[in-house]
Length: 137
Figure (cartoon, rainbow, N blue to C red):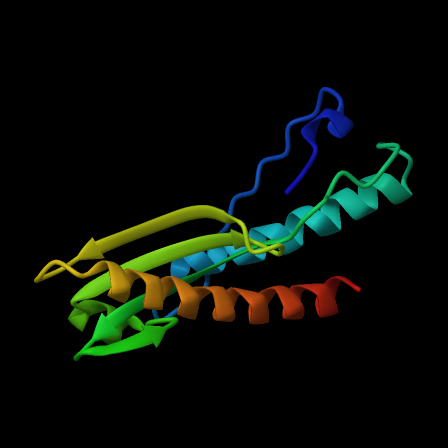
């Protein structure tokens, strides 16, 4: 998450091209875009172009779903194409929700199934944010 007031009259555009993937391109783009944004802002700060680092929390995203009755994290293309429930979850490092988008591809899913998928996504996102922090130092 970024305090945009710190950027002044600047616009930052993040355009992500996933070169090779087996599903989850949208969530991979979101997770990678945060790393690119942080790195760019760190450079701007070091170069004196902005007075302070405006980043106050990380962002990452994962796909989850139900495939053959099993809840799964980070679905590949084959799993995604067979999923009875397909969901994307975007969260902050503090565990706050930015987006939950879920679709029943067949039968509707239950609230307990949704909660299980969101919990699974939260664990996956926590792992991704740990890796982001390692990469960014």
